[in-house]
Image (cartoon, helix red, strand yellow):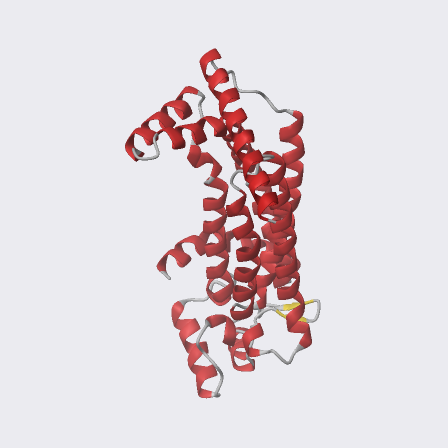
Length: 304
């Protein structure tokens, strides 16, 4: 959990003043999610550019894979030469995903520990609240589970602080779906998060299909199409509803970003300045891939 605290600290510093202004935990999560996603737009564009370049030379990479199928070291060397020649950094395509992962971990730290990162209570004060809630028979596994309890609210008020307003459109964001299955309202935000993830997965698959007309790299896309919604359903089931609200908001914004950056990339698409030799190899590789795809389709038709 140590890394969660490290990542949650700067996020808590951003969340606290916004919460002070609007006095709504839910809307604060929404606003902060929007701000963070806007700040990551340059990374998204950089990733799209890297992906576009990689797609243009993908037939060359596929040709190298066939040529050096039994010599992985030689394949990696030749592939790196192509990347270096055309200024492609494979890691830049993964950078937004890595940054997003760290942001998610930061949100997990804040959502599970709001007394620490939003109210800025000391560990001794949080420990005192935990003891009061435990003595009253309340559940104290996670900080978020007891910070809305009457005992906690009374103690926080005595400290001269205003208790956090966890109510968001009639939903208590400290609750967990796994512990409140009978409460229909608790289902709303997790379901929206799952539906948004399904929509995002289909959108990503469609973009991948348009970028790979020969069907290359679609297997991974099909896996993610099912994996991401299932993963989202699981985490929204076991985590506080506040985390589901973050996931829903972030997913919707990411879809908007993906749609807009995809249009920008199409309008500003630039062909790589391939050398004559590489261009010839590329055309040859494309032709081989097309013929291979045609043969596969013919075999499928015969088998039917």
